[in-house]
Image 1 (cartoon, rainbow, N blue to C red):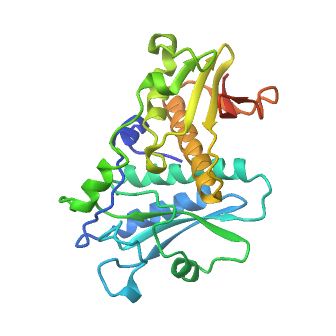
Image 2: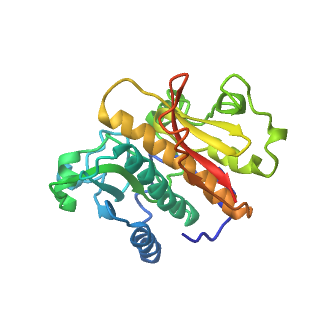
Length: 282
């Protein structure tokens, strides 16, 4: 994925947009760029499409976002295959992939918003021709943000504190979960960690944690015991988004490395944390 602007600028700039300017259509060349990015990002088990609905017209022509989204005409849809037994890593990989598309839309000056359940799933499934073994994982409106926000959007931002992020010491640790990681001990990785901290997540829960070890940065996800599959999938998607932010930033500032699962740490639980992967410098 190629970006025109600095990835740090894109990540810092992006906000969830729920109110769109219905008078301003997305240009065809920008739609084409995003569709080309979707083709590039498509892998086995994932596919992405852009569909048209009009949230300001008749009920028949609307997707049905229960008032959460207004003014949008285009929606990006991320679809996952149901044929994989390793749902954890599938969901993580999906989050990493779809976030790259989201960031490309931001790079083009377009607004987006991750949506897990606040849309008419049956109507959308019919529109995209959802297969028997496919699942709609994520939907995002696509368009230009309205200058004036609706009162409901301002309220929604206040309830989950979506404009706020956890402080550094709540997310990043050194050797164990008892010792907060000092910024001074991260060297060149400080920017990559900060971009990870700014990652969006469902209800702004930020379910990821990092432990700096001698051999790299271990990534954990907070275990969610609520049981609902979409809640667990959301947490793994969120971890994938965080991994995406970290790796894109590291690449931009020329820090070579990769996310790699350490079999000695795999499935290790620490304080209700589940190990995900380790960033290994190269």
